[in-house]
Amino acid sequence: MIYNNIEYKVSFYRDNKGKSSVLEYIDELPEKERSKVYKYIKFLKANKGVLDEPYSKHIKGKIRELRVDFGKNKHRIFYFTFVEKNIIFLHAFLKKTPKTSVREIKKAEDMYYNIINNPKVYEQK
Image 1 (cartoon, rainbow, N blue to C red):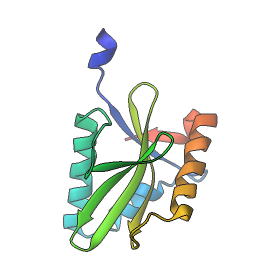
Image 2: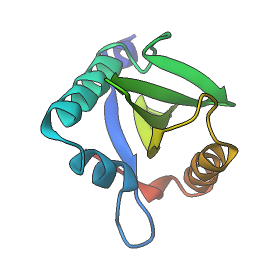
Image 3: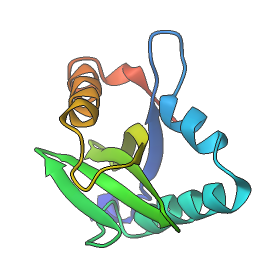
């Protein structure tokens, strides 16, 4: 059972120009909010890609959202756990309504299916 001891990896979806919208989103946050997001990402990794509410919530299929609240700001980062213990972050946004927008979910779904059909689309970080 050596496979069970393999550490989970964190990866980010990248578009055809090599840009990660998730990393760009996080980089634009104020320092304290950015630190909290990275803390939650480390927490998710340490827990092998599985967190319950209030930290994470199932969205659709294999897609979940990492939920990072900072005051009135509700940051949401869609992710899923992929083969060989990869946690892949797909899409990030600032949630402004009580219910998650169908448009935001659709973006994450498109990225998810792009990875499933072409696993080299993501990059480990």
